[in-house]
Image (tube, rainbow, N blue to C red; front, side, top):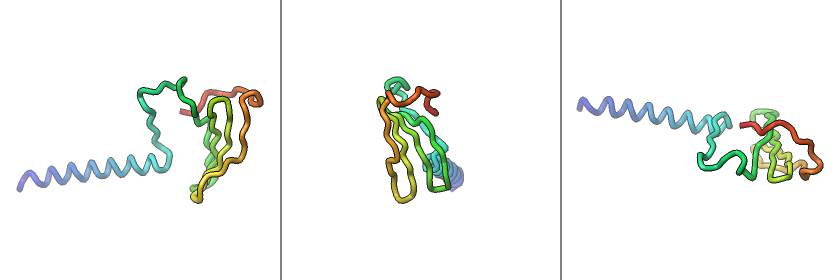
Length: 96
């Protein structure tokens, strides 16, 4: 009977930690990289993200030698602009 209270407290703390992590990842505030993949080996990189409102944002994504401007909203995503590498100036390194 005495062991039940500490076990329940530990389950509550782990549940709160898991819920906080889910919320942070859902809002885009916590990002994790895969340990086996180096930055130079990535085929797709998020260069910049611009939040417009709580549910809407613009994403500048580099895929190989192409740059894509993508708008995201609760209703889905839309490609706004696509450019090849020879049309684009090389800017700063991607946001990590």
